[in-house]
Length: 249
Image 1 (tube, rainbow, N blue to C red):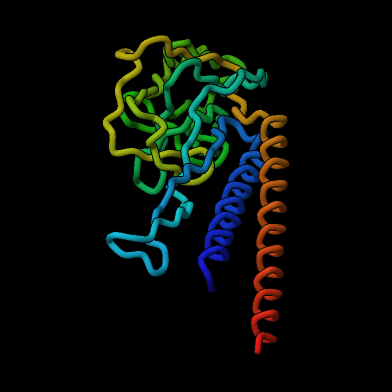
Image 2: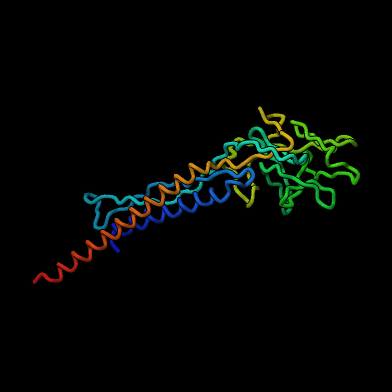
């Protein structure tokens, strides 16, 4: 296969990867606290066929360098659920999953059959001492109050304080499925952070702008169609050239 076709295939492969990410963003535009993603590409240069140290040139390919996550805060959506919290600022809740401590901005919570505070997906939410948050059997759901600094209380008194942490580089956190993230960076307690507050009875929406995502999807589709037409035109020209050469006596 010649160089032009290889370059065309690399271009179409990059566009397909970009389309997959845009489609993933659109599919999660209603997911609580979802963060949109963008593909990061970079140029890869290779020596042209027949190139030497003194002659020839480079061929430019595009390669997938990774996915960049946009950690901008989504808008606040009121839910009326006293267990839901919206994190206003760059904080994360701590949860327990498979014996590990993971982090999330998804503040949609519930109380399970064991009277333990969990995410809707089942992971126990942790307090500022790294322990699960336990309610009493007689705690009234409607009496639960969560303060801006994360203190949970009921008519029976204070229950616990949510562990809310911040990180210097949240965009570098690794996604672990759903709305959970992991990181090797040591979390900073919210007391040491600036402008982080919890808002009860609300959650954070996705930061995906559906109009922007649809426009990007159309742009990618048009670029892919153009790349396909260019590849087809080149292949037809190549076949025609080979046909003409075969007739030369």
